Structure formats: C-alpha cells, structure tokens
Image (cartoon, rainbow, N blue to C red; front, side, top):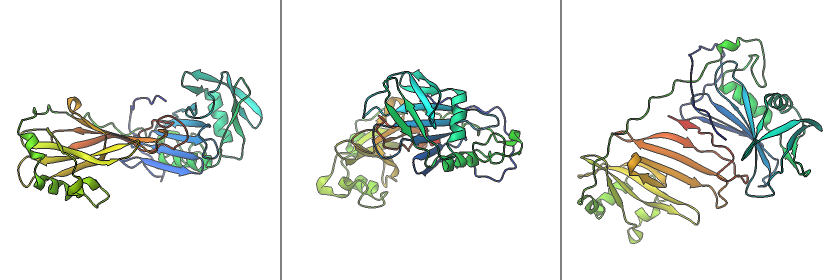
Length: 339
C-alpha cells in the first residue's frame, strides 16, 4: 500500500471535545480490526478475515485529517498461505454483488461507491466476502469494525459531524482540524572519519562497564553482562569527541538485534543508549535502522530509523504494528511515528 505524503493547507480550531493523536502515534485494536494513526492525524483502519489463519484477506480504510477528506480503500490477499486470487474479484455484501475490485498488481483498489457501501455495512452485523473468477471465497470479519471506525472518528475529531464514519451529526464539518504541521527535515552533519586509535576503545573493560550501566536488567544484552561470553564491540567515529559503539544484544534463528550507544571517547565515557533492537548502522546516511521480525514466517515486523543530528540519534520513523496473518512483512505499512 502506498501512503501519500502529508500536507496541511491550514489550521482549523475544533470545538469538539475529543482526543488528539499523541506525538508517538496511536494503536487501537478490537477483535478482528485494528487502527493505527500518526501524529499528523493520518489513520488507517485494518480489518482481517476471522480466525488466526494465514490465507485470508485484509481491508485497509485510510483517511487523512481535515474536513471533507475521502476514505480510500485497499484489499490485500495473504501471500504466504493459500492460492492467490484469479481476477476479476467481486465484492459481495449480504449476498449482493457490490462491484468488481480493480486489480492494482499486488493488491486491489476499492472504488469510492464500494467504500461507501462497506462503511454503511461494517458497523452493523453483516456478511462481507470477496469471490474470484474461480469461485474461491474469502470472508472479511466485521467483528470489531464499529469500535475501530468510531475510534478513528474520535482521534480525527469528527464525532458528531456529517463526515463521521459512525457517529454522525450536525456539527460544522469545517471545524474538523487539518493535519499537524510537518517538522522540518533533520540536519545531518557530516561524520568525522574513523581513526586508527578508535578501535582500541573496543578493548577497554571500563567502556563495557559504561555500556552495562545504561541497561535496565540482565535480559538486555545478556552477552554484554557476562564477561565470559563477551562479544566484540565495534566503534564508529561521529565527531571530534564522540563515537558510536555497538555490540550484538540478541540473536535467534530469524533475528539479530544490536545495541548502539553514543559514547565520549575519553573517560568516564558517558554512554548514552540509543536502542538495543537495531539491525545496522548506515554510515553514509548517518542512520541507525532496525528491522525486526516478530516470528520466523516473516509476516509481521517492526521498522524504525534514527538519524544523527550532530548531538544525538533522533527517532524519525517507526512502523511498530502489524498483525501476523500471512502477509509478507505485514499487510500494511502505516507508520505510527513520523517526525
């Protein structure tokens, strides 16, 4: 699913007493439906087939913040289990064919009138299914849809307006607040070149002790806590006084997670932990990235990025929620945190 870039034409003040999206985003789940929103007010409601199988479908209903914004819909078929659909694929609500879904290569676009039919049906007790040209049927659950769509109305401060998805009313639609202003880009100063003596820091027991003191318990980086299992440290120069130190913190059959610390290159080192869940440091981009699978099937994962701004590594992106349902890398790429 391609998420559009954020824009905001104006600020509007809302008189509706409803929740706003916190800076670190919001995730809400009820039964077979989930909601993810980021601080801009952009939200996506995600529904799945009933049960925990890996051969179902998922519907994404996305909406930007602001008055009179449209809801867009996309349908995806799980691609790690079962047979792929053979187009054309029809949308059927309570045994009535609503229309044919438009094939968009890896997923199916839902036309505006079909979205409206879904929004009318989902809050009630209904049967929604898709049928491909071979007659293969996959069902979309409506369990939890009403609660999730109502939560989207609340988060986007639409309750009681004509444009609400569930709780419609006569409040002025123009008072629905627009997207929050995007933060300016993070300045990425050039890194100082590595020095031959930097690697000598990796051999110092006192540096390991400084790293350990930032951890909250033995479950974090157990090899760093046990000197008999000590893994090597790597050191990358950041600026004239600071380096980035890393070591492996966790490994299993499908994941490796590394810890990264910003450290002064002189005693007492003053180590500052960035994360213990990273995948790699990309020196050219001055960026730490983390891509962590939640299970070996690789149908759900977390993705985060931190950028060096000259003083610290600053989180600028996190996609931390995906339900494990047979979609490679997870069905939806909605970030819950964007700087």
